[in-house]
Amino acid sequence: MKKHPILLGLVVAFAVAAVALGGMAVTGLLFKGHASMSLTDKIAVVVIKGVMLESRKTIEDIEKYRKDKAVKAIIIRIDSPGGAVGPAQEIYEAIKSAKASKKVIASLSNVAASGGYYVASATDKIIANPATLTGSIGVIMDFANVEELIKKVGLNFITLKAGKFKDIGSVSRPMTAEEKDLLQSVLDDVHGQFIRAVAEGRKIPQDKIRTIADGRIFTGEQAKKLGLVDQLGGLADAVALAKKLSGAAADAKIIYSDQDKRPFMELFTATLANVIMDRLNLRGAAPMFISPLLSLGRE
Image (cartoon, rainbow, N blue to C red; front, side, top):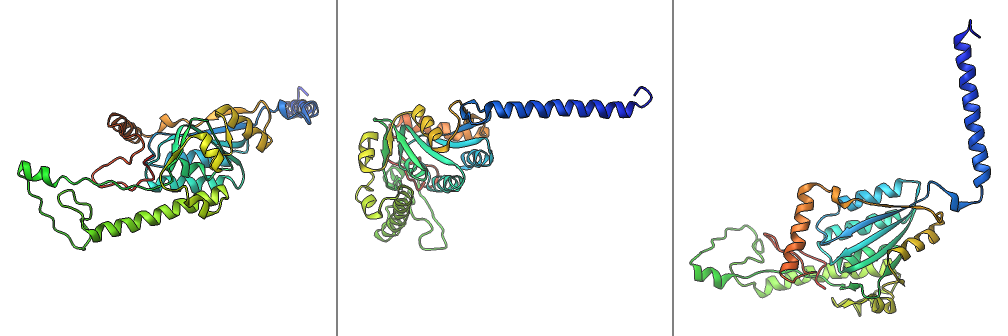
């Protein structure tokens, strides 16, 4: 062996590999049939908090956990009064995609209304606290008219446009009846999409959803009676249900998405929107920027 160091190295490597394989075999026999001894099972919690103005980070988290074989189930933890329509619909579709291979549970925290409920309705099961504010199946678009204020300060707006409705919702003039009808048709269409999405996700006839889809909010207890929620409880109950439905080990590790790792400007904008709405006592209303924001959002 001393004269053949390469051969010696091969023998040593073979011996180490044999010991490792033997250890793995013994471990497998010891833990066979004992799911509670699993060291790999995970339950992922994706947090949606505040006004939903974007969907990218949430979708990335859902997709990451969908691909992770160690993640047996995903919990969508929602504390949101709603937000923009687009992000809510995109997250809804991401959840539907994840359901093809994972169990997805919604855990409703303080508020999960309007767009927050839209997202929750895509999951396999919904758990809410008894006093959670949820529902608000409706759509709102806010406009401001400061025509009288403009006259008082002596300002004059000159609008040039190509297209009859291009300045619809202008702050410097009243809205015409024709413009109101046009916008109402848009709202009605999006409202219908909301109703269909909830009906599909909850497996409840559209006609039944339509009777309660007038923008009203419900407590968790009321929502459960209406079939909008499956079970009353908190996050711990959602974790227990996720383990049960997915067959995950009793000691499965709980991992959380880190929402604070969003890009600075994205995090700043979302935080500022929440602060402004709190100060104005408009929690749940659609935030107004330069142009009106179509929103799944006033409780």
